[in-house]
Length: 198
Image 1 (cartoon, rainbow, N blue to C red):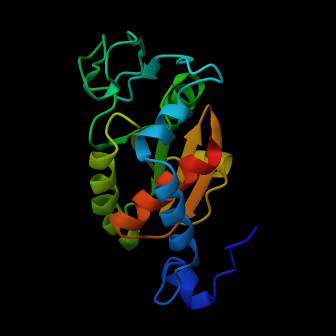
Image 2 (cartoon, helix red, strand yellow):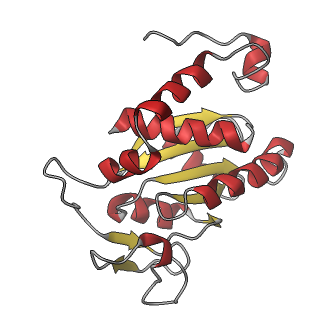
């Protein structure tokens, strides 16, 4: 794959986007120029004919599957059971059972942060990920899973370091990122990963 290279130990510690390492950032910037964010996310939720394939979201608060009318924007859709927003501008805490159910039903891509209370970088990641969740409200959903409380989920999804971001689409992992990054770089990773998976 052109444009990619292995990270040095220092770059890995600094998140592979350390000082002087612009290889991945340049690639994502190029993809951002080629396709707008709206085009990328529209493709992610449509089939070949351009029609929306499904309009369902699982409520991460109560676990109810909600069907959405075709004309309702996902950013304002509410759960029929508990009344909470289905795609809020926030990172929602979830459980392994709800995550598995969301992966089976959701029409939107889901980014999950695997974190632990003892992890200092995870606290930094929370603030940065919240900024990204605000930016992509209605296009993606963001959740976090406590790895200390649910070690089986880490084993199931192959998470070995914290914080780890995993982008799921159509029930499968599309991309993974390990380590803390500023919100700008997380957003570039999200859009770049979405562009590659369409």
